[in-house]
Image 1 (spheres, one colour):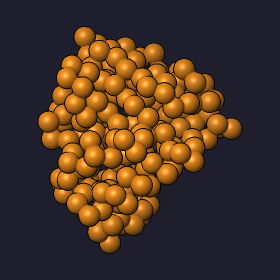
Image 2 (tube, rainbow, N blue to C red):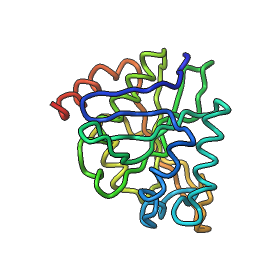
Image 3 (cartoon, rainbow, N blue to C red):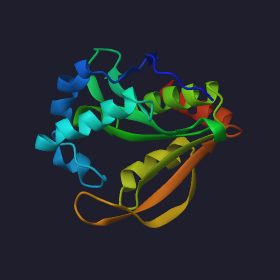
Image 4 (cartoon, rainbow, N blue to C red):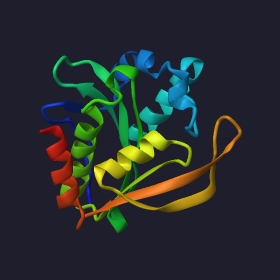
Length: 191
């Protein structure tokens, strides 16, 4: 499994590998405290630059591939999503750090971006794509379920969040054998 950073797009979303040039486009989108309430790190206000530096640094070092998510119809930056935990030896990757500005939430952007990320992973040889979220993040869990991912279980007291509270992490996955059905479902939602 070899996943390489490059622009991926469909009729709705465009994913651009994160560069320094994206910093100021993402900054105003990230400045919503509610986006970060259930995350392990904070990225709003004064916390944005350290968060962005981590995402960019991890991308440049090959630990992850972060993307600026853009809406295709008007070119507006709408959020961020990444491939994390790249494990080529086990043909496994995680999709995470996904968040969208208010104007993109509840639109076709997330399923369109997930279609691109999942297709990119499976086309590169992945056998398993993982997704995980905070146990209190009902919106994220509902989106993963609607997408067709399988809920696998919960790791209790898995991460200490920036708030000082412990996060139980809910794991979902899509296997290569499940990908055709998940892909068909996403494509039907976007048609």
